[in-house]
Amino acid sequence: MRAQNAAVKPFNVAELEGDIREAVQQRPAHIQPVEPMPRLPSVPEYVSHHEDATEIGRLSAEAIVKEYEVTAKEIEAVGEFVKEMAKRCEQLTTSASDMLKEIKTTAARYRKEGKRIFNEIESCSSATDEVRQLCGTFRDRIAAKAADMAG
Image 1 (cartoon, rainbow, N blue to C red):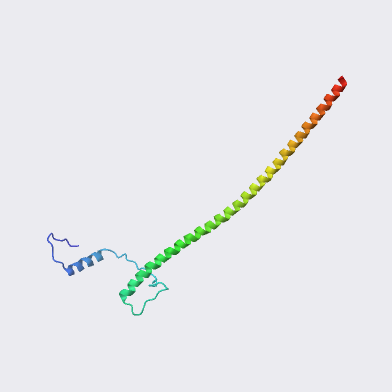
Image 2: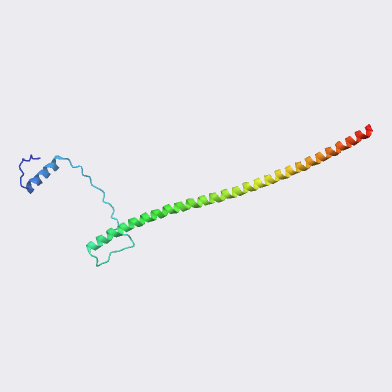
C-alpha cells in the first residue's frame, strides 16, 4: 500500500481502486464456494400474498407473520412441556393409587393381627382365670381334707 502524507488529500476513486487491486493481488484467495441454501418458503402455508399487495406490504406482512409463527411454535413447545407434565402427573396418580391400595391392605393386616392378639390375650386371660379358680378349688379341697384329717 502507498504511504499517506500527513496532509489530507482529496478523495481519488482511481487511487482507491488501485489500492484494492494491489491488496487483493497480494493475498491468496481463500474464498470457497458455498452450497446454495435451500430457499425456505417466504410465508407459512396458512397465508398467501394478495395480488394487489405492494412489495413493501408483502415484506412487512412476511416479517410479521414470521414473528407470529416463531411465537406460535414457542407456544406449541410449551404445550409439549405441559403434555409431559400431565403425563408425569398421571404416572404419579397411578403410583399414588397403588400406594393407597397397599396402605389399605397393610392397615387391614394390622387390624386382623390386632384382633388375633386381642382374642389370644382374652383367651389367655380366661384360661388364667380358669386355672386360678381350679387352683383355688384345689386349695380349698386340700384344706378341707387336711381339716378333716386333723379333727
